Length: 403
Ligand SMILES: *Cc1c(COP(=O)(O)O)cnc(C)c1O
Image (tube, rainbow, N blue to C red):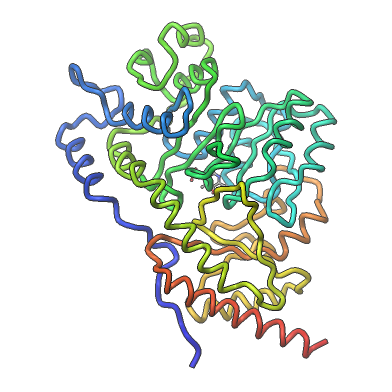
C-alpha cells in the first residue's frame, strides 16, 4: 500500500495569542484607521513601521494594503510613466507584471536560469539597450541571484532597482537583509507569505523623496506628520500638490496582528528552512530529478521548495503531478500549458506582448514547486519527499521503458 499524505498545503499557523489580544484592543478602541489617533497614542501601524524598518536597518517604511500595491506605489514614486518599459523577471507571479501594468508601463521580461534566478547575461544585454530606467526584480520563490553583479549591471546604465521581496522577507544575501540592495523594496503580508495579515504589504527605502511620495500616494491626506518611520513633514510638504492620493493604507488591526509575528519572524524562518532541508534531503539522489543547489552565502527562507524534471516531456511531468496529488502531495508545475491556481508564467501574460524566451521556456517547462507551511512537521516533510521521490522514480522508469 502506498503512503498517502493527509495534511493541507494551504493551512498556515494561527495568529499568535499576543497578536489576537492586541487586535482585540484595537477593536475595543474603535480607532482602526491609522490616522485616527488619541492624544499621546502611538498607533499600531506606526509601531509596526518603525519595528520593520529597524529589523531591516532601513530608514523608512510604509505599511500598505498589499504587496501588489507596494510595488505599484514604488514604481509611481520613481516616476514611472505610461508607455515606459520596466524590466522584470520571466519567472515570477502575476502581481509583479500586474504592478507594472497598473501604472500603464510595459513589462519586458528577463530570462530565468537553471538556478531559478534572473539571467544576468540577459539582463546586462537589455540594460545596455537603454530602453528602461527601472528593474522590478522579483526574488521569486526566495532564490536570490548574485546581487553584487546585479547591482553593478544596473548601475552601469542608471537602472533603478525595485526589489520584490514577497518570498525573501527575513532572508539575507552575504549578510545583507533582502531588500536592502535596491532603491526600494516591497514586501507582502498576504496569508501565504512570511507574515500573515490576510492582505498587506510594506514599501521600504532609504530615500526620503521616494518615502515622501509613497506616504502621499498611499492616502495620507494632510496627516503625514503622524508618522514614525517616514521623512519629516518638511521633507514631505514639497510633494503634496503634485502627488495623487491613491488610497492603499494599512489599518491598525492588521498591524497589531503583524507586530506579534514580526517578533517571531527569525524563528519562523529557521523553522521553514528546517522543513526545506528535510524535503531536499529526501529528494536527493532521485534519478531524473534535479535539486536546486543553494549558494552558501544565501540565507534563504524555505517556505517553499522547487526542483526540476529536466528534459522530461510534458505528459510525463503531468503524470507525476497527478500521481503525487492522488497521494495528497500538491505540486505546482510552471510548464503547464494553461495558468492554474497561483501559477502562471510570462507566456500567459498576454497583455505584456512579450517576446518568446526559448532558453527560459526550457527551464520553466521543468519547474515543480511546493509550498511548505509551518503546520507541517519534519515527519510530514519526510513523508512528502518519499512520495515525490517514489513517483518521480516511477515516472522516470516508465519513460525509460517506453524509449
Ligand atoms: C504574493 C506576491 C506578491 C504580492 O502579492 P499581494 O497578494 O499583492 O500581497 C508579489 N510578488 C510575488 C512573487 C508574490 O508571490
